[in-house]
Amino acid sequence: MKIAAALCVRNEEWILPRTLDVLSVFCDRIFILDDNSNDKTKEICLSYDKVDYEDWNKRDNMHIRQEGLRKQRNIDRVSSYNPDYVLFVDAD
Image (cartoon, rainbow, N blue to C red; front, side, top):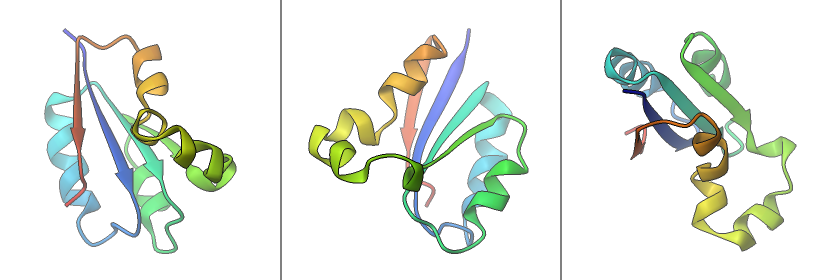
């Protein structure tokens, strides 16, 4: 059984290591969409093997926001992994 987690994050360095440590125990893949963090969020995410990191800055922000929660929650990216279960969580 494959379990994936999806997180939208922004400036979560204060809690992210704890969150990723816990999720890494039972999730096979953790999908992160970083919404313009200017702290060490990216570096923390990239230090975890199970994390699939995407920087929202590289995408067309207005297009994503107009398409709503489906794009914001990475549903297309997560479903391409073909998990049996998806856990949508906040870092905090």
